[in-house]
Length: 268
Image (cartoon, rainbow, N blue to C red; front, side, top):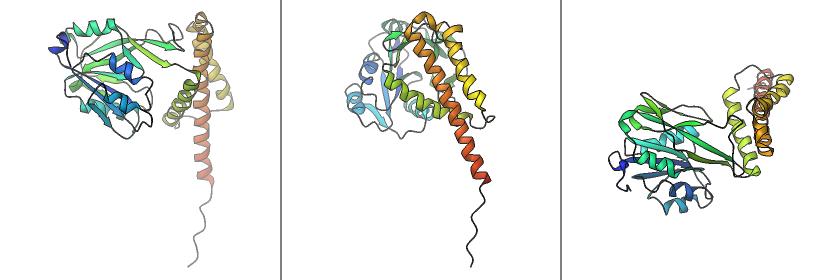
């Protein structure tokens, strides 16, 4: 695609993973319509995500869901250019970031951290630990890999990194209902990652989420955001509570299986 800007000298691929992102994908793709290649990896959407994405790019690929890290690694493998910008479907490249990338001297680094402006219910959240939120998203493909975490995976560059000023706009929590679904999903993934830790006690189930709330609402100044800051702080506490309850459940099921006697072998 290219528009005669700096990206013509350094062709740029954009990779996006998506699943049931009909409400987001069009604006996400429109914000990067100026790049040379756009690849959308869809993991079995049952809405119109693929249809909408196909209007903006020919490179819409179906790939079974294997987790965030593996999906992004697969998308990265499809990029034909050395420089890649990785996005989530609920993110947008701001006009300022577009201008900065278009005139960027790519020789200065092997990867660039981009600040994200995070929104909750259509309001920018600048406290609660949500800002500054630098993410390594623009990088050379040949020196980059994705960490294998189940949730909040990240890119790692073996080389020099720098920071950009233009922002990614992140519309991560547009509704309370969607937020509650994310809490359930993320807490399940986090519990699976942490299930080998010490068995959580009843005190842990109470105090850990309480600390998460106070940490984000008081220490990270969520209170200055009014009700929005209160709700964001509660989200962190709820995610933590569900995570530890699910860890307790996983470990308890495992213990019960180990204690259960094996069924007697049938006599011959």
